[in-house]
Image (cartoon, rainbow, N blue to C red):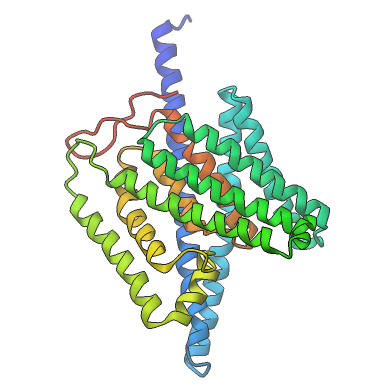
Length: 339
């Protein structure tokens, strides 16, 4: 039986659409996993150091610790699935640069799992830091060519720069170059990375808050959400500076190189702008959110994997027909292209 060309094209479009929608679903699942890790493992569980150690607090802390361990393990597991789907997609679309970048991410992920059971060697760790920096550069180039508001794209490139500077700082420390400068070079690179990370968050949020000319009925609510997030940071840093210091370093990786007011403004812009950006540039919004929620230069290898995947997602999803699509009357996005 002969199948007509139009039927073949329609079937091919349906397959491509299914693949794109699966990738979007998995990207959102990774975002949820990282968000849970931030809230449960890196925020609520860390607050346990400030509560009394007697009962019933000890039992509650133990339960939270087990929940935190589960959410912590979910991030790399979901990340590996997302990485596999991205690799298949890059091969199917014949994008060698994307495939090479994702292969480098796979090397970093494999090394992270290997270091659980094997003692890390300095030479291997140094090579991995260089690989992470190269992945950040490749992701920045890819993001610069994707669709979406220019301010948001510059913001995600800033996040990639933060990831790259953190890796370069680690490589400098491991290579012994920092020792020749009295440690100042590594600290300077880390501070520049934190500043780029915070500036990227601010610009990504700004890209969503800039009016697009389309109806945005929930805009006011998201602006209020951003104001509340910024106010929360300012009040916590003012009323409980020690608690804020612990959470800032352990939860989001900011070690004080960026002033609190600037951090509060960036968090406010990101909290208010990312939901609005999600309606206009799906990949940039989800990818940036994953990178931000993963924190800056945290030690967990699963979070590093999620961060690198967030950069890959930011430069990939909007090439699947999810960027700058028109909205229907219900506010939902329509997929205009499938590949």
